[in-house]
Length: 131
Image (tube, rainbow, N blue to C red; front, side, top):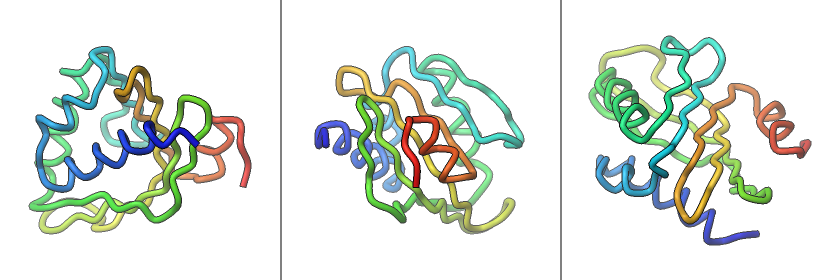
């Protein structure tokens, strides 16, 4: 397992959870791509660090508070890290707890792609793995 890639993802989640969006930005590749899950209200994809950050700022405004918690081990597959998360939200907005699996593609120590899946098996399949 490439622990370095896992550490990049853990750092991004920690920065998100503390609200340090400058640190999140710093962990994104300049050409970052965000692919929301199928059926997400804003379908994307969002291409470029600025576009990704704008989308995340908009999403974060939906709730009064939020945090993303890993609920599985981090799986390393080549240049990708897969983790199942629960996005806990509070206050206004839709559903308070959203389960997703995120596939992060890491390039040169930064997150190049954030791809979200409702179905964990589908996310694993996207990286050539199975449950």
